Image (cartoon, rainbow, N blue to C red; front, top):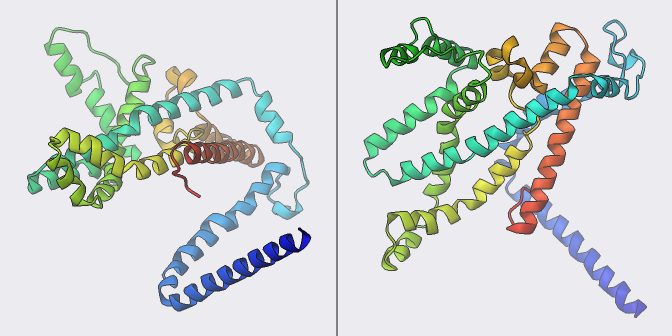
Length: 320
């Protein structure tokens, strides 16, 4: 028995060693192609991994004069300060509500747009719609919010002018608690739906045409082809993007909320991203802001790992 186990372990060791050799051999054989990875690796190392050292100031009483290394350690003092802050619960709740609304309502929109565009047979019309839909992605939130202010203004805005023509009272949309979530979710979808649809259109273009031919022979109409061929074929991409989106539940987006949130909507519009920016840049509390940001990152990492494990068990699709 002992000899059998030893021989089995030895064979496994030989297999692992051979596998490692094969991997390095394959990398060496295709070394020219792997060189294309080098700029990306250097970029991530410089701009993503080196700045991670700054996380340590979340555990220090950071002092500009002494620097990160010279500043004294503070332990979990700033984490405790945040959780003892009387508005911490409200800020976390606002962040989760807005992020979940964006995820639940906004996530299916690019899929729906991609499926609709895939069914369009007039190529010129399809390209025009696709171009118009993803242009908002390149417009900054400053411009988007300015446009919203002009369009929704009760003083000459076209929406309120139309409401007045219909004999109704003009509405102050911006800064109104009753319309805050609708404006946040609606503007977020308008800005990102076209860009998100590109990924799904790329996935749809890779679907085997023979599957559609087989579905047609079985008598499937366009809707059934979409339901039984297109959707299952892109389900892997959908799951991967959903897992990644789950990691952003603690991040509702600071630019949009910073510009659209007003004192009258602060009770439902103050989120962690904006709070971190204000604590760090406006108040100069760098250690405190880093601690709150690190809390966001850890929760996001836990959510991604959890969503990935659930997805792996349920449908076998996972990031790793």
